[in-house]
Image (cartoon, rainbow, N blue to C red; front, side):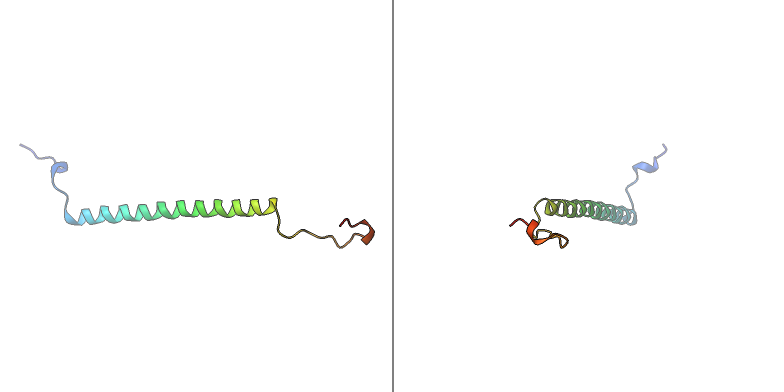
Length: 69
C-alpha cells in the first residue's frame, strides 16, 4: 500500500516557518489597516477644520470704511 505524502505529519521546521509566515502577514495587514485609518483620520480632521476655522482670515487691502465690525 502506498502512503500519500500529504498524510505525513508536518516537520517541526515547517511548523515554525508557517507560523512565522502567518505572523509576518498579520503584521503587514495590521500595518496597512493602521496606515489607511491614520490617513483617513488626518483627512477628516483637516476637512472639518476648514468648515469652522478658529482664526478668521483678514484682508489687508480693504479700506477702513468698508470693514464691517
